[in-house]
Image (cartoon, rainbow, N blue to C red; front, side, top):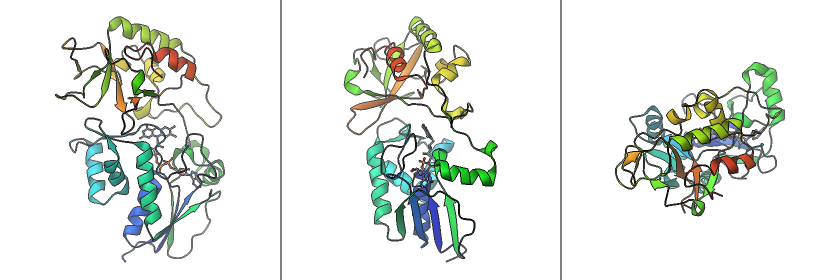
Length: 310
Ligand SMILES: Cc1cc2nc3c(=O)[nH]c(=O)nc-3n(C[C@H](O)[C@H](O)[C@H](O)COP(=O)(O)OP(=O)(O)OC[C@H]3O[C@@H](n4cnc5c(N)ncnc54)[C@H](O)[C@@H]3O)c2cc1C
């Protein structure tokens, strides 16, 4: 059996914990997977299912010419559960691998449940064990929203300065509330119909939008949040703080998206990606935000094609 442990304890049934459990079981290792849902939910998790995606439904590019695409291909070659589930539940998203999050989590939960080497224990682990039994190992995979009790236990081990969390909302809109006379279908740099819906803005629409966004009301930070940002997932208002053009060179970049009605690129574009297989919901790409719900409604309805967005 090589040098791997015979028994593995994994805390956390998210993407990391489920993948680790799957791979270890594939090597013949007995796994006990602890997941606290549905007894305890973090502030962001809502579903009792394993492998719940709490924010974007995109796992980013699937093109092997990109680093993230190559990583996914390597995972696929290694029999990854996450990649298998993503492929089965894929929704159209151009070059990105995006999933129907509900079906994705169902698929992972079923596969883990059906694996005879994995025992799923629905329980909150509150303390890291001081000593592990001979021949066993532990993986902590509780993600950025580790429960308070376990985080305390971890703090005692690592020190406070290494733990941080910041939350932002990723808006989802109903497809039927979009104005199809304005939004156009296209994937960036792609010919053909494309998988994204795009809301084009001219210069004055963009300037009005960022003026209102700069003044909009935000949700105050919670006690567990610190203003340390993950640069790959900045809230739009934080991006705007960095300069009036930042959004136009970030999630609102218009390059490679030709509006068929004008034959040209717009000044800025908001992209919408399919959220579920039915295509009844779309999410706003790269639009994580701390705006209050009321302000989201007011500000996002300034986007052409989203005037009636729900
Ligand atoms: C609000 C929010 C938005 C995010 N947005 C993005 C994004 O857009 N793109 C992106 O790539 N990443 C995003 N992330 C990061 C995201 O969490 C990771 O990409 C991914 O979910 C990490 O997987 P994980 O398995 O490490 O953690 P998770 O998916 O969070 O899974 C951890 C699991 O551990 C369980 N758990 C926690 N504590 C305990 C305990 N004490 N005992 C037992 N079980 C426990 C939880 O219930 C959960 O099921 C976001 C995170 C949050 C919270």
